[in-house]
Image (tube, rainbow, N blue to C red; front, side):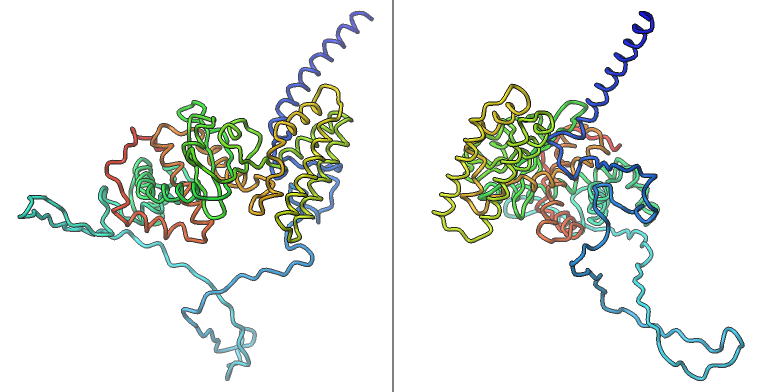
Length: 454
């Protein structure tokens, strides 16, 4: 019996260790800081018990297609370029000759032309010397790049293929050869993408200046590797602009550098300590604190009434703010809501997740209700989290940025594409525009050595 007990205890210990390992791995995907859109869904029924008609149920618990009560969306059709009459002379069954048709059954077909081979153009750039000052200059042409032998379409398509279609540079080179018969290497595709980034850097700085002048900015950050070492990609998002900055720091020096030390707007953020170190004018994210409250309620019974109170307060505030309140009414609502939060903080709870939660609420007491007093401020940081989705997907594919040149290209192209989309502009047309504008291409751009084309 003792041997049997010892054997069972060893097996039980092994199972406990395995459970702990799996729970640790699960916390990476399901924790208070994981947005609901990224959480793994679970159902009480196994997949095998579902009917065949439920095979297309989405993994997030929703169902595909138009929701009940919503107007259908129809795809718009372009104007006709050509109209072809399709006729027949005789019956396919008996061979009887047709006199005339009895009707027309139209069908619209949208086609794209076959890929075109590359055009080779030689630009004879004439050189001049000024008789007055002796300055020598070379004539320029908008379609002739300052360096390299590839035109603006190749530059724009390389950058778009990398950051929109998420292709490795060797696949971008394969695509050019398959579609256009244009032979280039993966390294050349990288250099073309770098040229697009350098051409658009002036516009990147314009985006930064626009964000510096904004009244409200959403900020968030996530990890990224730089030559295998830890770095961070920051996002600064407004209604019409998004800027990414890859830095080796996660401290308050980054928003101070990007936004400026004298930034006067409101920052919407999560609970990371860098934000209050940068600015006192904050709005803490309610989506984060509600997720943390829900998680604490699952771990401690004392957390359930606190979670319910927080959720009810948030819903009540949102409902009240739907009406057109005056400044005085907003200020009074803010005072009432603050008293509600203070009453939560004063509750006596044992040490554990709930006590930690109340400490976070108390630590951000001055920043939970900014949105009540300022109509332009959102109570959540969803805009910044959404802006980080594309860099996170690219991070999984790229693995690591090689060096400073890679960081430069990464933050520049991502910022341009995100901003152009926010403004309803065509990224391909805009990439060609900035690549064609030679004044925007800085020959003296200080970016260190070459990034691998992998």
